[in-house]
Image 1: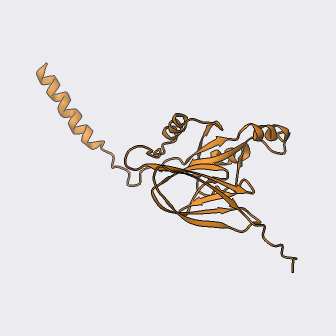
Image 2: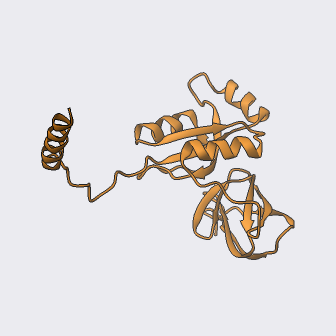
Image 3: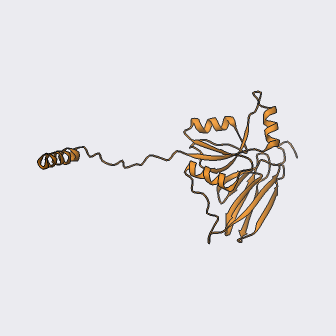
Length: 197
């Protein structure tokens, strides 16, 4: 019995070494994934009124990475969700009044590192609103959602840009200190029309 085991082991070792496949030099890309927030009751009523082929449900970007080549402005519709999925992306949706735990679970399902709100890297809550609503928010050069949004910031200096088509861009550099709640209301001025003199 001992001799058969040795022969089998030797044969497995001999043939197994011939079957070694070289490792891929390029690991497969992680599937892009976004977390979207379902809009609240007022938006749901509007969505239901327009759901007869004109406009469907609305969502707000919360976190994640859009697939390459997919862009949007302001709020997303169910059509945008289908576009993300067709481009190879995944979508995780949280309710309008999600809890921190629900958002953390969505981060895990999406494979996104959830922001650390504990310990020495304390975050500060920043609520950004605009007139008009639905403007794009960019923080430190990265798209971060649309107004109104509640975002978490690390201590330090951050550049916030709020912009909407047809309006002047609002931009500020602010210094965040730990433990404060900050509210910003960016008032965007309508751009003058090309015909005005």
